[in-house]
Amino acid sequence: PTSSSGEVDMGDAISKLPPFEEFRVLHVDPLVLAIDDFFSDAECDRYVEMSISPPSASDINDKPQIESFQTRSKTVGKDESAKSQRTSTTWFHHYKNVPELMAKASRLVGLDTIDRWEEPQTVRYRRNEKFTWHLDALAPGQAMPEQGGQRLATLLVYLKDLESGGATIFRDLTGLDSGPLRV
Image (tube, rainbow, N blue to C red; front, side, top):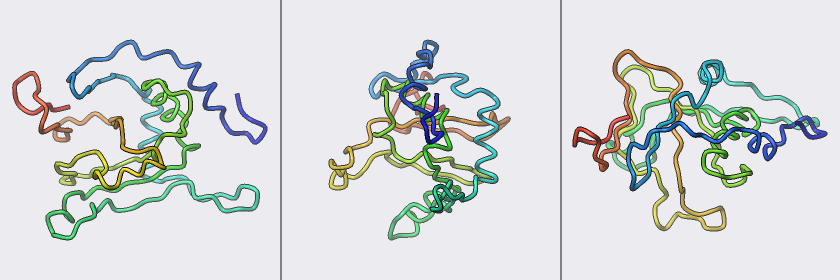
């Protein structure tokens, strides 16, 4: 269902999704889950396309609306090591452009609204691009409780299967082979 303004009613969209029942527990503390087919092939293709040619600005009620914002992902830091930590390209998306992601992610973590989410992002890694080891959290002094506080979860959705290369490694978590957990 949509509202009178034509926007999707997220609460209704979330509640109509079936719960995720098929998942693999990769690690318990902290919890790391793998859910195959989180997105359909068509949804994956749409999100890949958004990272090639993101939606352009449009006018809503005569006010320009930025649909997606592209940036080269350079991690903020003062030294060369920090500056070269991340070499990918990131697009920040308006919530209304990624309804499948917002609804499925909310359903996964048990939320019935999207008011606690950070802006959705699509990250593209080309050959030899990377995002090296980092903590996916705010520094203790930057938690901003007035804006919801510390990040509680991170959702990674892999949009393409690769024949070789590409991986996410949780350096401090032990995988089944007793090495770092690799997804």
